[in-house]
Length: 391
Image (tube, rainbow, N blue to C red):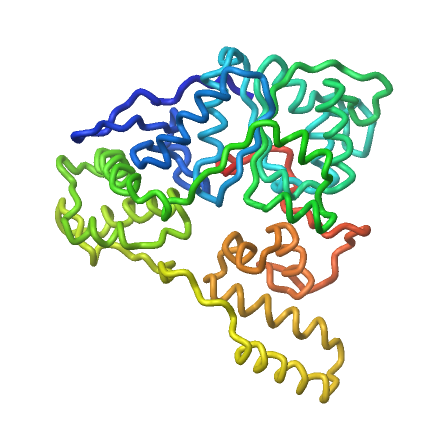
């Protein structure tokens, strides 16, 4: 648990129209993180977002942040906390998809000594340690349905019951939730409780992907250029006009985090202090134009292939088709699980569960996991969260 303050939010980028930079206080420790480590508000869409945040931050309302991976959801949550009356209280951040279903209840609500095997002492959960502060719950769309009901009760009653306890503990916590999943579709599909969705969605913050706010691309690039240039000993690292055009024309499927990595890598390989287009490796390039819908002809060819398989009637036909789809999608996304899950319109936990079934995870033997009726597989067995666990 930590106390959060406005992290370098008053820093200004050089230029004719200075932009405030919002970043973590120790970005060096986040070099392996999948989350965005800086935000600027130069593009008109970003300026509107900042105005919206400044309006809702002073209240005590629950906030739902929606945005793609790498758009800076945790940074926004921290900024809301820093602008709120709770700024001097603790700020806790928990990735709900980073823990198995058996661990997350204990992490959220705490447990009593002897509540389960391995509970050698009592432990406070994140709600208690964030008391009088703010708790950021990332990837709430991946919460199991059973835990959603318990979380709803905490939000309604403002009290938690530890695992193995018989008495509730009052808590005073502002909750900020975040997801890259369409919760309305999840509610319709029965994967997310409608009442919990309404409880979360008191004040919504919609983060625009980097490709839709091009005015932020070059200011962010210059910020990362200065940050990594100082670390690598460059006195005056700059982008050539051709490199600037390249960055502006790129689709940035990985959003701000991809831009940061691209600048870092270009500085490592460039022969001088001026970054050229050839210094960048933008392998995730996707066409900027909206992709055309799948045509009837292409669908028909897929149906024909499935029909041929049906005629041959191989054993475990469905598993054969599903594993083929998973392998193909993983190869297309260069084994990036986040992008693969987004492409298949499923959560990352569901993707990893299916990958484990078919031996597609590293060190996986393809043995079926004991799901106990749940589509969620444990992704981390430790109670300790890595620095980059929250997006």
